[in-house]
Structure formats: C-alpha cells, structure tokens
Image (cartoon, rainbow, N blue to C red):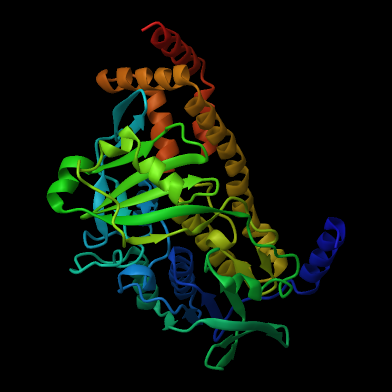
Length: 455
C-alpha cells in the first residue's frame, strides 16, 4: 500500500468516526504497566475525575515488580533525568527514598587520554538511579522499591484495575477493540492503549489490525547488574555515573550506573557480543573503576534488550493509541521522560478531545513528531561524538576544555554543560546542538585542541 493511499484511507476513517468520546461508563484497556502505561492510567483517571466522568480502566501486565530478577524487570538502565524529576514533582509524583537507590551528583568521563569529573551544575542530587524491578537476580535483602511498581501503585490508587494476565489476542467487535487473555477471558473496550515497549511479541498482535501501524526500528543493547559490597561501591563508584568514550570497534557508548550496592553496566553499539563485552571490561579505563581482583561472575543478571531508534508509523487509530517505546521514545536517553510526555498527551487527548484517529492526529501526533524531530538532531550529535572518539587530538581537546571549566569558578562551562545534558537527557538534543554552534564554544574547543596537540 502506497503512502498516499494509506493517508487517504486514514483520513476517510477519521472523517467517518470523528465524534468518538469517552463518557460515564467508558472502558479503557492499557496493555503494559511500565512507566508509559502506569502514567497514562494515572493521568487519564485524574483528568476524568476532574471533569466528573466515571470510567473503568484495566491494566494488563503479568509482571510482578515486587520480585527481583527478570520477573519484575523492564530491561532498562534506570536513570531518571533531573528535568523529569522536576516534571514529576509538579504532577504530585515525588520519588520516595525507597525507590531512589542512588542520587547521582556527578558524571565521570573516562577516555584513554584521561579522566575528568563533571559535577551537577546546581550541586544537587536530582538525578535518580532506580531499579525498574525490585533488584537484580540474586538479591537477598529487599531494601528498595521498584520504580515501575511505584508508578503502578499510584495508578491503582487512582482507581485502575490491575489484571496480572497477558493479552493473548486483540480483535475488533462492532467497531471496538476486544482483548482476549490467555485463560480465554474476553472484554470489549472503548479505548485500547498499547504500552508494552518493544521487548515483547505482543506488538505482532497489532500488525494488520491497526491500519498503517508499523513498530519502531530497534537495535540491541546490553544491560547487566553487578553486585558490589558497600565499601567497594563507595570507594570505586560513589554517587557518580561513569561514562566511557573509548575507541573500541562496534561500541558507541558505555556507562556504569550506581544503584545501592549494585552497578548497572549499559553498552550500546553494533552486534554487542561476549568478546566486545570482555574487551570493554579489559580496558584500563574500566579496570580503574572496579576492585583490582574483580572478575565478571559466571552467573549474573543480564539481558540484551531491544531499544527503539525510530518512531512507529501511525501509532494511533480509532480507539487505539501506542505510547512510550511502542510509539516513540528519545534516542538512547531519557526513555522514561518520553514515556511521561506521550502518556500525558494521549490521556489529555482521550479525555478532552476524543479517541478517534482525527483526535489523536491533531492533539497526540504533534508530541510524537517533536520527539522524532529532536532525535534526528540527536543522531548528528552521536555521530560527532563517534568522530571525536576516533581522533586522539579531538579527545584531548574535549578533556582539556572540561578540566579547565571544572576548575574555574563562575563563567560558562560550555563543554561541561553540553556533555552533562547529552549524557543525562536533561535537555533536548536541539538545545544541546545549538550550544555547540555558539562561536565561543567552537573557539574554545579549537583552542584547547590545538594546545593539547603541542603538549
């Protein structure tokens, strides 16, 4: 089917069913209770209460976030940007100490030519490191609460009904989506929200069911949890996220993230496999962050999750909307922030505008497009970072510029802020990129690069 034909059919569909709305007694199904699904449920029920309509909302998710290991894990690094912490707070969603395993107060940038610590601009621990489940496999003592479980609890407190079942089949009945579970139970809904991300076969339920929908393009990452005792954590890792820009074939980005007495290791790249993982661990830059006698355990909690690198095609239809990773997310960073934005936009559209294709196109789709457009700029930023990784003189220029900025009091820390917001996802890629085009940024970077070549 050509693009023009698809556009015409979608337009015809939205024109024919433009008055679809939610009112008293409407039934909503949310498949998946990660951040996107739980936040959507929270916002929709809160908005419905404000305007005085009573709706029924079911959340389908077999995961139990109170359990450690894969049974409660959503396969994510678990970093919440400072901008998202602030936005959640304005919504009345404050993260308790039982959820935040570590408050990140700095980033440590490691390169083959040196290391530098980049402190948080406002000297506050506002970046949260969390477990999406209840901790890695092998956790003996439950000290922390799941971030996803916390959000799920907020949705339930608003009135959501949690069904620990997997959606086995989705079809249409009299113009409404119908969900069938594995045990054969079938329910019909006025709105179906898909929020299970891209690490699931459930996406296939919608291929061919929703006109025009195609899942996001994905690549594979590596995430693992490594146990260290408290003394080792404080001595080698601390409250810093350790970022590595090292020239290893196929490796784009790597980080060590502290969480309680565990370290989450995240690798992004092409065809990540055991040899690449071992090569990374064998570099001097990584070894200095771990105890001298430390070795990778034979058995540890690990996964190779898919991550979205592109937005879905037509993530909405009459009575159906895709949010979070299954719709669009930020490139490599702040996926939870994108889940928040898409969840709130979809809920606001459903309550105040309607649930037709036309409604989602007008009021939800612009949010998705804004994220996708920003991701295009993000790709350029990561390409530049890849080029810097390849040239020693450029790496030395970055390091020298950051070290100089970190030792000076006051003034603009131009390179430090660019790296900080790139690593944390606290600012849009567009904003970061524009800062790199500032004449003073380019002048200082060039000067530090030239000076470092002669030293």
